[in-house]
Length: 203
Image (cartoon, rainbow, N blue to C red):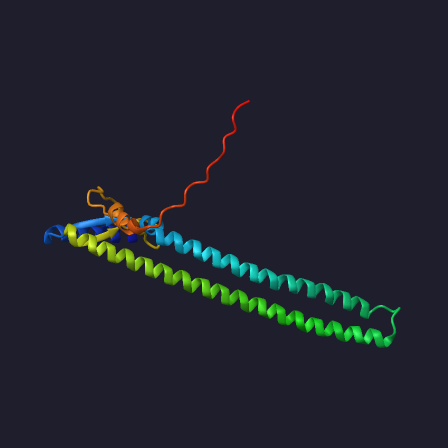
């Protein structure tokens, strides 16, 4: 880990020294803050949560059906061993129990398939959402640095695989986080008005 930090520090020093030598103008951005505070991110997260909730409701219906079938199977199995019934009736209920067991196994398979499909669908939607938003942020950053003359933008929120920051220090004088975020949120929909609370007069 120490070796990794030394290498990263050396790389950072090289970037800054090379930038100074070549006349590069370096800006910084907190990409995590921009991503989390972008109104489209919040909207996409809310949509994903709604879809996940709908899928969970659909799954619960399947689970309820499975539990009812399981209770019915146990009831049929018990009655198939009821000596008060005729042999013919016991055989009939035994076959009914076997049929119900097959239905239970089929329902269990369908629930597992539903879980896998739901997980894959939500994962793909989340990945597409993330990629699209990151591209929008990247385009906004490019447009911003064209007007400011910056030639390199470093993400101060980025971390190494060991969880240590890649950028160890910045004075913040060329940070474009707030300006990029303001540009991204310029077309954000107006927030709904807060609910008014009635105040009762004192007696």
